[in-house]
Image (spheres, rainbow, N blue to C red):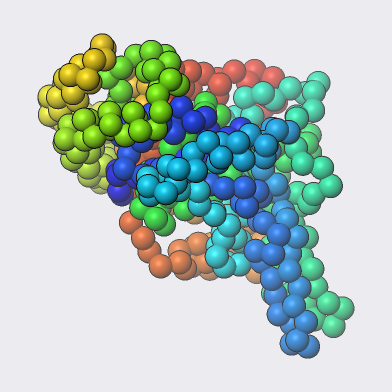
Length: 400
């Protein structure tokens, strides 16, 4: 885990420039996924060479839900921050997979996530039986299609047996919305673990999905709202006031403030490293034990946060008591959540005769092991957990 840099978890609209400014007041570097990653499996990410020398590539599978103005807004954001990119503090990164195996892992985990009631509810806060979802890309494939030749069978045919039906009986359009949203978050989180950065969720939808996923690490799985209470606040300024100030600031002014805050920020990161180690302890497999371990660090944390508040006051800002439910916050959870994602993939292949759970675990872990971040970052989480509880129109979960 590297608390010095963060990867923005992409959503249905691009992050705002103000959000990037606020994030760079804590993190040394921010990575923003660019437009080229637009689906769970992108055009050409998986290809297969057959014995007769012909090579077939897959088309796009499960495009992400995006606002109709997403691309225009994204390009405007890029044009406004192009000078910041040259400093190395902000980078637009390509999340497209580097190998077919990695693309397939993302598909397996995404399909398996539909079997989790908590994840499905978190992904569809806007679900309504009488309405169809918006922001879905038309004329695209949302079900596994394996290209092949008459005389040769594809080695990927077993993927057609992966069960991508949701735990609830919902329409095909809503299923597409759910798997696109879940796959988008899961891919970003997996890439964060590969590059040892903190996944930063800046919208309520992704925050709830990340919390629902993080909750899977605990034996007695808590609700997203309950897990959110263990988040640690980073801001010492009331967020609405801070946003208003940042809106008016140039990037040069933001970097000047950042320099003033740096000594206290470095100390705060040290406390957060201790927090991450505490979260990873084998004794913290239930939420209550984890909360008790956090209490031992609270004294150190309050002292360092006060130093950061003093730095804010020295440059003319009025500070307030940091609240994890209002501004930038971090949540360290037990790293067993990564095992939970593998369990989701195993669940989706329960009917696949060609791949045993043991074989599947080998596939999922085949990539060279990297340090796995047990930390999630959230921005403006005042409604955290609410959306996951606002789905009374869901049918009952189907029996498994």
